[in-house]
Length: 88
Image 1 (cartoon, rainbow, N blue to C red):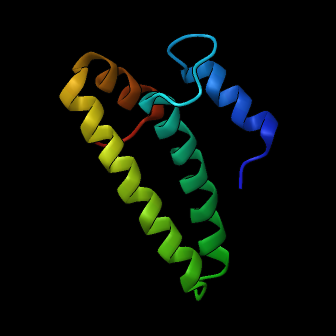
Image 2: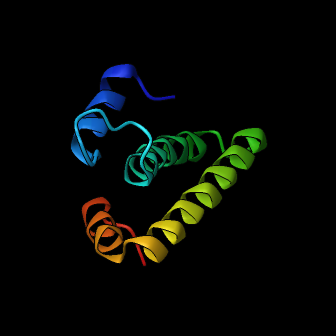
Image 3: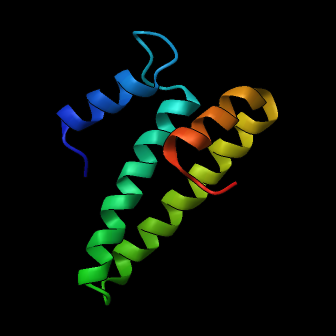
């Protein structure tokens, strides 16, 4: 789970405008950070299958959001992929 300060920092960095909290860009950035943290947790606790299931759901949700962004605004999609250093 992300702390509020970390989440606010991500929102300010990836938001389309100043009051943006729910755009696809922000959601993908927050999910990416959560995925990164959960991956670290699973490296220590490799038998935590409940968290692994949650990780798979997050990855699927991020993929859906990225597909949506790619379909509707390819320019924003490419810049987000580059910022987050994700594979295409």
